Amino acid sequence: MKNQNNKPDILTPKVTGIGGIFFFTENPAETRNWYADNLGLEVNDYGSTFESRDLVDPDQINALQWSPFKNGSEYFAPSKKEFMINYRVQNIEGLVQKLKENGVTVLDEIVSYDYGKFVHIMDPEGNKIELWEPAG
Image 1 (cartoon, rainbow, N blue to C red):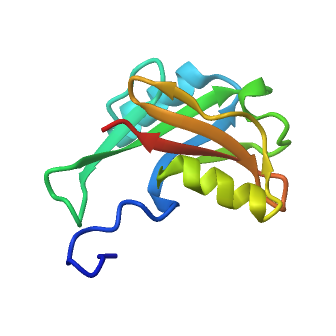
Image 2: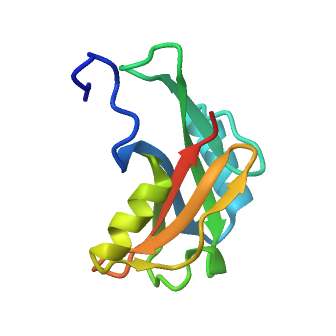
């Protein structure tokens, strides 16, 4: 979406893509190795990262993180689901404000790291969602 000056709209609080797919498995190392051996994923201790160019800003590289987690990991709590999706967002502060105004359960405060800002919410079906605004 572009504004009236024909520039990308970077201020509207919203999801801009998928940042990661996380799921439970009995043995994360074996799962990573199976995907590497059989499907050619380049894996490390966290899973695999898929990179792509942003359609609006082709100089921007987007990343999607694929990560198997050990069954029962508390990282998904309080969700009881076997997966969690990370959504890439813009204007995370504005989005959290909007979500709170809409009565959405925000589980924690925004936390900043070198690679971006994160916060977690719950959807109406009990799925924990991770929101990530990449750094820069």
